[in-house]
Amino acid sequence: MQSMLLQLAEGMATSVAIFVLTLLFSLPLGMLVALARMSKSRLLSGLMRIYISIMRGTPLMLQLLVVFFGPYYLLRVNLGSGYRFPAVILAFVINYAAYFAESYRGGIASMPRGQYEAAQVLGYSRAQTFAHIILPQVVKRVLPSVTNEVITLVKDTSLAFVLSVTEMFTIAKAIAAAEKTMIPYLAAGIFYYVFNFVVAMLMERLEHRLNYYR
Amino acid sequence: MKKFFALLLATLMVVALAACSGSTPAETKTFTVGFDQDFPPYGYVENGEFAGFDLDLAREVAARNGWTIQLTPINWDAKDFELDSGAIDCIWNGFTMNGREDAYTWSKPYIDNSQVIVVRKDSGISTFDDLAGKVVAVQTDSSAQAALNSDDCADLAASFAKTLTFAEYNTAFMELEAGSVDAIAMDIGVANYQVAGREDQFVILDQTLVAEQYGIGFKLGNTALRDTVQKTYDAMLADGTVAKLAEKYGLSDCVID
Image 1 (tube, rainbow over the protein chains, first blue to last red):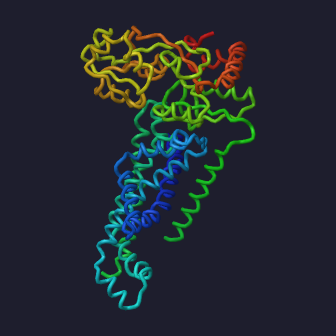
Image 2 (cartoon, rainbow over the protein chains, first blue to last red):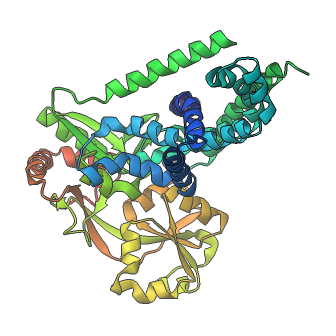
Image 3 (spheres, rainbow over the protein chains, first blue to last red):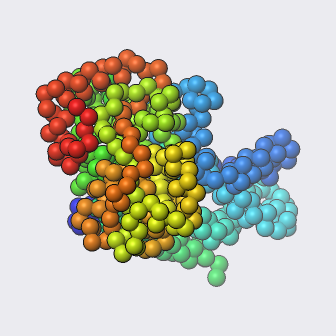
């Protein structure tokens, strides 16, 4: 029992690593995608529209396979076994960036026109307006929908096994197979719940802290 | 709170980096074995370590050749991708040769295996005829599935109400226990392992679907590696190493001498 929990905890470390690395890269990347998607250049915004459409329109499991096996099957480049974990992160990042981008876009678009005009009158440049006036409000506004995605990400980490990265759920499955019991699944469920509980709590606290005008 | 986050992030980055650098190719040749880690007694996890008849054999082969062994649990559905792309060197994990003869470069067969049917003890099913109108589970892309799809078993398979595929056998056993499937078609070695200790719940039917052999599967054309592994295996067979491992995993009846 103790050994089982220890093994699951080890798998949890991989799950958490996937989670943190994905957020680290996809949160900022999502902002770039959102800005490109709203850009005046029709080429850029068109490209981003296609990218978002593909990322949202195909299963993450398929995207994982394409990212890992694509280089070999499409370009005949063999990236070897060491590419596994980076491939998982890459696939998660490009997938989640697309979702985040759409959340951000909603937030940016919801800002009243008058704020830009007022900023212009006060002598703010476009970049300054965005960084100092628009962005802080957008962050507050999109937080609840970002929290939603973040919580989904915690559970999506179990998809990493498609590329044979042994995160927690994979280990739970393996123990269940060897020991012929369902307890590892129950334990895994509790692990996920606690993880998400902590994530939700932190996000709520952040929301509260950013709520400085009320 | 910020400091805590920073610390957490830093720790994770280090862990991730360590994980990456650990998998870079070493000076000595690595022998990467792909296997399904939910497939006892051939390959599974015991107390956090990889165990199993096939994996012990693979370790010994690597040790005798001075290779570094890398045991890589794979997603069974993606095994051909893994092998073709060079992510793994071979599939060594209760891998049925029959029906796949031309798809891989094979070692000589080393295990005699047959496909059997497992049912609940209280189900009242004792022969294949009793399976008519029942729901039968098989593993995706397994040899049991291939057997049921073959011409020899066409009538039997047609008599089932439904054939359901599962990612691994443990889920299938959960379903069998819960009553949502009536029978599981699977390899006898795995069936013996799964039923052991639960004889009051499950029985293995005496009739068998097909007899078949296990081999080690290499990428088509990779005869050089195949020959080296085969030579080492033959030596292990001759000096009794194979027999000893077979006894350890309860497979003595199945090993091909």
